[in-house]
Picture 1 (cartoon, rainbow, N blue to C red):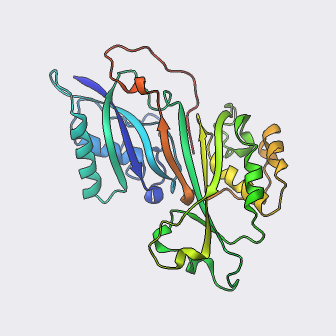
Picture 2: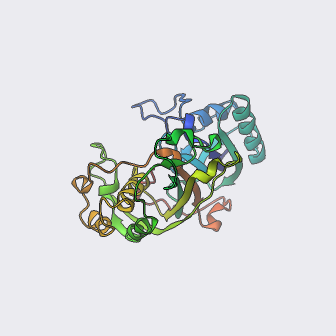
Picture 3: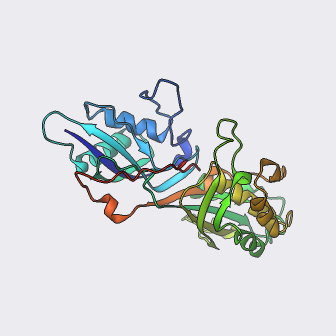
Length: 313
């Protein structure tokens, strides 16, 4: 009997090339241990389903980006009228990840309707970007790399920035919420340049952060900040380029109002060459939200699929 499942899982993205498998023409079902999707499919194959367990991600992230709660759906089929128990799938995958030293943790699996789509049925996604700025009163001759706590390595973006002003950063961030064309903030790709880049951002919240370190005294060298961004979906590199632009605002290279102009004139030419895309280390996919009733298994359900380019960060 065939059944569809929704998986809730976390991962540390440092070792992965990306969350999604490389796209190879006419080779959809192939092993790819360098991606979150690929290595999870390798684990699911060990259940010996009658069909290939295509692990369909709700959100695509680049290499180095982490996830606290991502989702994906997949189908499994076995002989007879029985289905795979969701608890057993969760246990099996976590055992596989642990045994092979893979930085993925399966939180739970549930059975969902056969037409459920983890990507298209998501009503919102929430991301968090963590960064830390070296305090101004520290000696300039000391290299920033010697001050980063080991517990935060590849978990937060550390910077030494002169004249960093968090209030300017917040002022620039106020222009992002709303329905905009984010072409300026998208990584240019000839294959996708003709797709529309209009997205709805619900909120952008800039707040003080905290160190996750237990190394005594090391976290006192930095001021930690967090940027929480919630929206329906995102274009490729959108959040990291938003952070890069706001960093330029914070150090006075562009005024906060320039963010509004970059949104009003959506073009790759509106992106300033001196602005750097924020590195993936500080980016976390925090949550993917669904309507609660959509998570209840129904033998017959209405097709809710709609045209949407999906989420890619």
